[in-house]
Structure formats: structure tokens, C-alpha cells
Image (cartoon, rainbow, N blue to C red):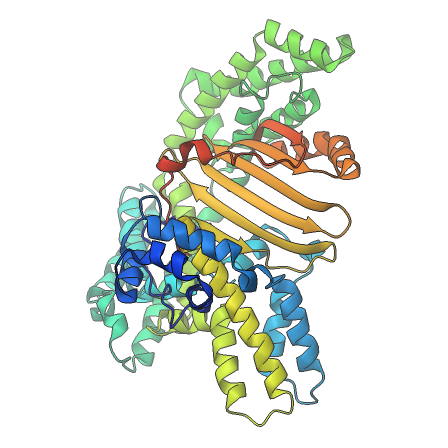
Length: 530
């Protein structure tokens, strides 16, 4: 996931480096500048931008209004369209430039979008470039920390194979390269360590191989698939799901049957000494039979829910889940979820290149859109390309658009992003994400669609998986489409283990943001660690 840091003091909000800020200051009226200045020079203003919080800085708020209302920045248009224009200009040349392939890969069609791809596009949108560079980690230190954590976990294991893995980890941690690994060395001139890194990578590969082999023999109850089914079962019997609008008997029956099948294959549960664990399969069988009786004897979902609650079936399921969790907690650490996660994180370090000090920086610069554009702009300006002027015009516009979202993020104390994909129906679109001190997340999605006009989505995510969705539109046709598909939306959210507490549709009149009332408690910066 994208981890958001509260520290937003980045060297990006400078007129010399952020073009959007330069445009705003250049076009501000004397009165507006006076409001920002308050008898301070420009250096002091920029200093306050970097040091003061947007919640308490009047300068930030004034600048934010100027940014949002600046005619040049308001007419920048859609980032996806600018990328398409740049691609069209590049296509006219017989000798393709390297940037062309990067842009084609970046501008994926919305139909091909999925969660991992969207995550990657947002991370590499250019908005977080300076933040990622500021937070770049020494990969050798990262490996060292992973091994230290793994060493503690494996040391508690009673499995014979764990002793060999533990010894391998200790030997690897004793190597001078990992022993001396710190983040400060990443700023030093890189040394040639190829032979050493190859040996370390080979040792990592050996450890990962042994752990992977052990995990293959892990009991079914400690697998990720079983964990997901158990979480889904818990969600389906949560109070909000046991309501007439959300309850689905078939979904509960399906997940119970899957859990029952997996438990029947569990050696760990069958060999457990506790009476509760021994009777698990029988208990689940009784619950499944009770649900079949309910299914056959009632005619409406409400009647099925009433019967379920009357027979206290949710309480029986909760008790069963607690017994299963208790058995899982007593599993050998070698098969734990933590060991599984650490093994996955270790795997990339079996490649020597992944351990090179400068590799992390190179990876960022080769994949981040802003970094690619800056490099391409520099190369094209020094070339004799026939379309040089036209290409540079589009590159400059794209960089200005990215700078605009960086500036918005900084001044609004949030993460403000464009939509990094191609969508034929979209004219304009952006996302704004905030988080308050109580770990509630708020997301505003503003879209302008060709067919349905302006559309605003306001989402609030809290208590880990509870969500409220407010939809604002003036299109009667669009609102009708949403109403017809709300049931499908609910089902999709529930399937993803997100509980919809509220889905409402409004006319597109001015509404308060769902987090405006708690504005003073929202303290997110826009720095991102990937």
C-alpha cells in the first residue's frame, strides 16, 4: 500500500522548481501578494511554506485559493489528454524516442485497470517523486532489518529445519557489508562490490528456498487463503452485515462450506488436544445444516435473517472463529503469517542488482513520470529533433500539470492526484485524499464526464473496513444508473471485505466535504513512502 507520512517539508515548493507556484506568484495582484507577504520577503514566504502547517498558515490558505482560481492553471486540462497529444507528436517521427514507450505503458486504458496497476500508476505519477527520493532506503540496510526480524521468529521454532535456517541468517548478518549497512552510506560515492553482493544474494536465495519449501508443508489453517476466508466469515456476521439491506444467506453458506472443507484437511486441528478444536468440524456441520433448514423454510431475505438471529447462529459462528484463531496462534513460528510475509519480502534480494546502493534511486528515476519527463526534456532540448519545439511544449505542459498537483497537495495538507489512466468518457478528473488523527480516511473524487457532466464522489473509510459513499450528480440518467446498480456495488464491496455503512445519491448542489467538520483534526502531509 501507499504509506503517507506526516512530514511534508520537501524542496518542491519553490518558484524555481515548482512551475505552478511560479505561475501563481507571477499572476497574483498586488493586493493578493500583500496578503501573502505581510511585510515579508519572498524568501520568508517560501520558508513558511516549507515549515508551517497548512491548517495554521494564512499564507498557505491564501496561496491555495490563488492556485485553485488561477486562470492558467485552471485551463491546464486533463493529464491523460496531454500525454496523448505528446504521443501523437512523437509518433510522427521515424526514429522513436525512449520516452514514447514509457508514456504508452503509463497511459493504460481504464478497462485494463486493476488494484496493483492503479497503485503503481499513482506511485509513479510524478506527484511523489521528490518524496520518494528523500525517503530512499539503503537496500542493504533493508535486507539487514528483514533478516533481524526473521531471526527472532525462526529462533522460536521447534522444527528441526528451522535450526539450519537460523544458522544461515546469523552467518549472513555477520558479513561486513550487512554489519556496517546504514542509510548514510547511500549518499557516498558507490563502491564496486559486485562479488560481495553476489555472495549475499546467493545466501538470501538459499534462505528463501528453505523457507519456501517449509511453507509448502504448512497446515492449511495458516495459509493466506484460509485467513481470507476466516476474515470474510467474520465480516458476514458483523452487526452492520446482519441488516436487511446487506444480509445474504447464500454468501454466508458459501464461506462456511469453504472453511469447513479446509478444516477437514487440517492436520493441526485434528491433532489438537483441546476438546473445542476436536469438535470444530461437527459444530460447523450443525451450523451449515441449520442454514439449509432456514433456506428451505423461508421465502424472503428478511425472514431468513430473523430466523438466523432467533437461533443465535451468529454467536455460534463467532465462538467457532475464536477457537480456530486460538489454534492458529499456537502454530509453529516457522509457518506463521509473519514468516510467510518476510519470505516474500526477502525474495527480491536474491538478485545482486537489488542490493546495489544506487539501484533504488535508478529504479525511481526510470519509472517515475516526472523524472522521465525531466530527463527527456533535457535530452530533446540538446538534440536536433525535427519536432523539438512541439515535443518540448507538451513536455513542459505535463511537468506544469504535475507541479500543480504537487502544489495543491502541499498547500491543502493532503494528497491531490490526477487520474493516471486513459478513459474515453473522461474530460477532467482528480482525487484528493486526507487522513485525520483518528485514522479515518477521506477521499474526494471530482470527475467531469462527456456524457453525464460533473460527478463528485465523497468517500469516508473508518474502523479499518467501514465505508460511507456520497454521490453527487445533476444527471437524472446517471443517478438512475447508480440506483439500478447499488446492489451490485454493495456486493462487490462486501466481497472485498469492505462494509458499506451508507451509500447515498444527492443533487450536485454545493455540499460540505465529509471531513470539513473535522478539518482541524486532519494532519496528513503529502510525503509518500512506497
